[in-house]
Amino acid sequence: MCGILGVVAKSQVNQLLYDGLLVLQHRGQDAAGIVTAEGATFHMHKGGGMVRDVFRTRNMRALLGACGIAHTRYPTAGSAWSAAESQPFYVNSPFGIVLGHNGNLTNTDQLKSELFRQDLRHVNTNSDSEVLLNVLAHELQEGAANYKLDPATIFAAVSGVHRRCRGAYAVVAMIAGYGLLAFRDPYGIRPLVFGKLETEHGTDYLVASESVALDALGYELVRDVAPGEAIFIDEDGHFYAQQCALNPTLNPCIFEYVYLARPDSVIDGISVYETRLRMGESLADKIRRGHADLEVDVVIPIPDSSRPAAMQLAKYLDLPYREGFIKNRYIGRTFIMPGQATRRRSVRQKLNAIGMEFKGKNVLLVDDSIVRGNTSREIVQMARESGAHKVFFASAAPPVRFPNVYGIDMPTREELIATGRTDDEIAREIGADRLIYQDLHALIEDVRSVNPKVTSFETSCFSGVYITGDVTKEYLDGVEAQRRDGARQAELAATQLDLNLEAVD
Image (cartoon, rainbow, N blue to C red; front, top):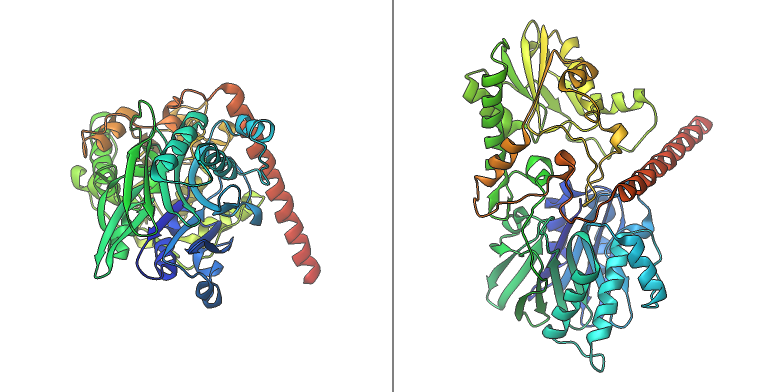
């Protein structure tokens, strides 16, 4: 997943974009970038790391202009971070275009071949986002008469992108000398909203991955960008919108509500916080119906995203709710490192148990989901070391059995703890006395009930059903091979770093 922002204002936007990225930091910590437009001139700064680490005062002073886009990156498809793949991306032919993308294309290899052989365009990195940018640039070139653009030509180019690109994509882009373009894939998998702010000089517009960015920056939420829709705001602040896809359907990624999005966001008319409360209610109902024999003394959440579900579960089961783990909020980025001991140490650096909440008690730990199981196993062990008599574990999400190919960097199938295992076997793997998973139909209803107008969701990591219809076994095998290669490269890099540090010592 990634966080994207785009703004057209009546004054300088550099501070606005920086503040917006801070609010969307949870959507990616690998890299960040901002591009502003001053007339037909772009000013860019991007790099690896957290937003606060990438930008210094001197960088911000150079980002001049009243129009801009910004991006915070989390790697997809198992790719390791490199400076070349930080966003936004830029091309200068036939127009100067910069683009930031949240999602993942599923036909990248096909598009690369078409770009090289048919469109005569060159792609410099392995990023699907650069491929998407070049497809957009080509479609603009094909439609522009005398290299002049208008909203109709721009929307026709987006229609061309929809015809050629498969997968998930929410996009913000700037075209030099013209304005800001934003669009969403025809399935509406990844979120995108826009808002406005009335000023004494006119109307400012802001596009963002989540509504929380609008709230924090003082903008009024207008609505979500519809699946397949494109919006264009020219440099003078004129707003245009058009549906650019044939037969679009709304299928938001359900994992946004489980874990990815901030709880104070509203996505496609659905409050993330309210869905997590309802997840707790339905999980409590499942425990009441199928696990009535559990003797639970206290309900404890795994910080932070599981808190609403855990609170509501405790309320519905009439059980005490306690904070049993304290999270260290000042830890920097946790790099991928080899070895179980290193992974274990990273968990214990982030979380510390409050012994009095565990000693001699039967505790029910509640987490938003279980993916690899390494963190869950370590947390169960911490609870036992703190004196828990029995440790039960509840997941607000169903078992994650399949990789996500739409913009979430999930492990390979063999790394997913739920693949090929029963609930009892998974419980033994993580060391719990009992494991309770949310049911998929209950999770869907929890989210759908907040906005009954949304009737379909992208649930592939739970169900194995890929909404775009083009994800084959061969494709999944290729993605997983790429992930394994990326993990090996990261392990070799970490090993070399350790050797270098030892040499220094």
